[in-house]
View 1: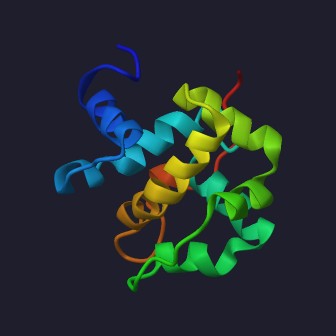
View 2: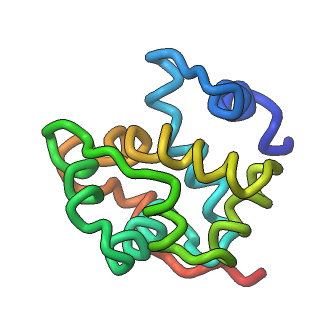
Length: 133
């Protein structure tokens, strides 16, 4: 079964179309986990680590915490990750880089929020290296 099939596929379609309902929000970490496992990040935690190292530590901490999620701009994400890594994410999503950046700013903070209900990233989303691909 491909990523675009089943429940995860329906949520991904919602993300790509810009509308995700309350129930689907809880599935965002799984969507991003599937997308990121085939990139150099390997996981949500891997992407978070890169964003923190790229100067977005305050935003990342807000997404992990219980308070309001601080916003992030496409330019900030691109600056923190670099062109090549953003291209990897866009390729996994099957959309242009600019569109991928918009989706990351729109949905990734909530995915992190959902993946860290007690302020800590759930074990299945912690940083891990790219699998032997």
